[in-house]
Length: 107
Image 1 (cartoon, rainbow, N blue to C red):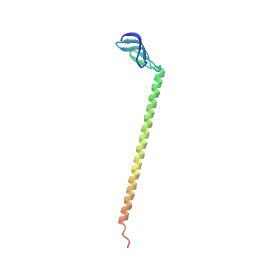
Image 2 (cartoon, one colour):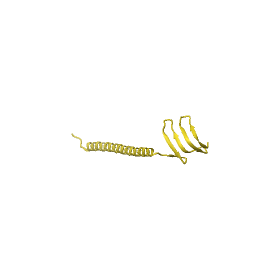
Image 3 (tube, rainbow, N blue to C red):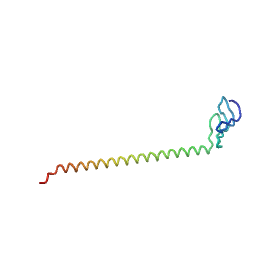
Image 4 (cartoon, helix red, strand yellow):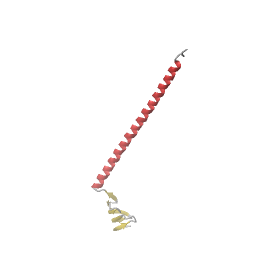
């Protein structure tokens, strides 16, 4: 496709603007839900609102990754503490058995 015009896809997305060699060069792409995306020089141009939303989304994703990492670390520390407690209990039990074996038998 080449030239100016409107193209509508089967899903309802519509592009109004200029095409060159089958590539959307400049114009507006309107999604089936009415969302509008500007195309300039063959690339999507973010509106200020889209840029703010993208930055907020990225910040939330990073914050969630941080919370997930902290939760994993806490679970790891808890598992290590439980393992250490089990090991200490096993040692205490072994020490008690050793002490019992070393006691002289009563007559």
